[in-house]
Length: 198
Image (cartoon, rainbow, N blue to C red; front, side, top):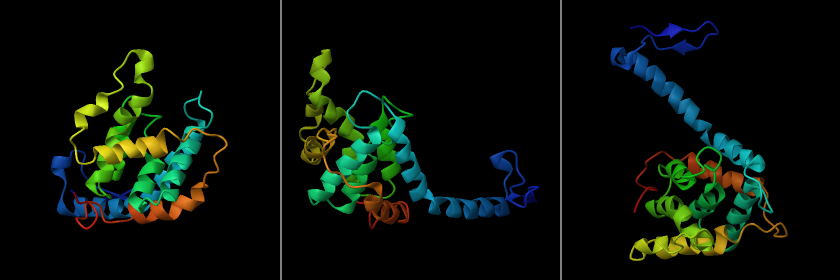
C-alpha cells in the first residue's frame, strides 16, 4: 500500500487495517509520532489547567491544589521528578475520578524512576487515611504495603504535600515556576534506563 496525501497536504498511510501496512507506512507514522511527542509537555500543562474548573466543594480548585502540592514539594527540597509528580498527581481527576492515581502514574511511568511512579499510583489509597473512616471505610488500607520499600515515601508525599494543600491562604508558586521542570521531564527519551530505574 502506498502513502497517500490528504487534501490539505498531510500525508497519510495507505492502509485501512494495520495488518496491511508497509514499511513506508510505519516509517511515516513513526515520523508523525516523534513530532507529536515533542508537544507532550504543552499538552500536560494544558490538561493541568483544565483542573481549574474541576470538582467543586474544596476551598481551592484542583489546579490550585496541584500548584500547592508541587510548591510544598519544591520547598521541602524534593527532586525534580517528585516535584513534577506532585504537580500532576491529580491530572486524571476529570476523566477517571475513581482511579485518577493510575492515570497520573501511567503518564509519568516512561519518564521517571519507578519509586515516583509507585508513589503517584498509590497516593489515592494512602490519601484515604485522612477521610475513609468518616464513611465507614478502612482508613488503614495502605497498611497492606507497610513492608514495601516506598511505603514511607508515599506516606510522606501524602502527609506533607498532598493532604495539606487545600489552603487558600498558602502562598503557592504559579504554574510558570514548574513549566521548565515539566519540559525537562517529558522531553526525556521514553523508557530510558538512565531515568526509569528501580
